[in-house]
Length: 293
Image 1: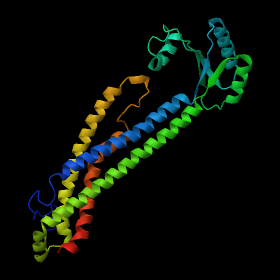
Image 2: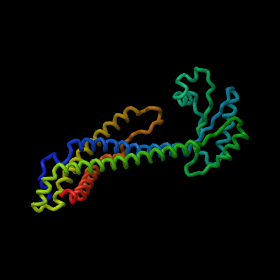
Image 3: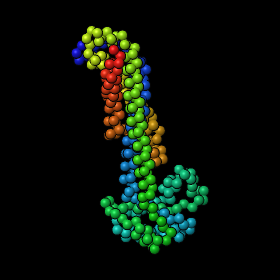
Image 4: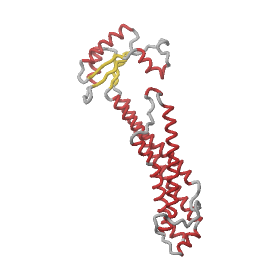
């Protein structure tokens, strides 16, 4: 009884419910989606922040084209003399129209709506720019030009991302707790259904760890099967979602990539599910045998 392979003294498939692997698969599917969502949000936020922290946008809302061009020239001359400014670029009208298209439609230029002139400002890496001084100089030399450094928007984005990541990891923890509870109930049900066989094994001199080994082996197989099934379903779902969001909104939606930590976490999910069910089943059997026999 002390060999590497546990003694199969219980009828195969009777010590645990046959639905347990399916339930574990559903739980691991939800766990995988929550993990990838949390890691994808983290990666998307890093990408957005790195692209915006060195950026600012000057907006000129002036319906008169001649006055708008004068303000543009004054704003460009002012920005190019500011320390820390690496590059400035006036966005073409078609590019501005593309930016406004998701909200105002593709025919915004033909609709006769006043389209603001936009100047893209790029700051030098590692340089801290006094935005108050930039605003004051623009107000003095180019009245009507307003600069937005995205700081307020980035702050809200950080707060929202932190909240969503916290919720994602909370879902992961809750799913794992629910999975452990399912294994506990399933193991107790298996022990109760095999109470006579367990008592006979005790009378024959079987140790508690020998009996626990039978149940934990089946729990290990259930966890491995359920983890593999849930991971496969998660991969299929993520592939379908990535195909749907690919190219939508010009980067407005985070890409559900499976590179780096997300891929490693997802590939390790079946092994983690098997380990979780094994440890939970052993703990349940060792705690329950004293009351059962």
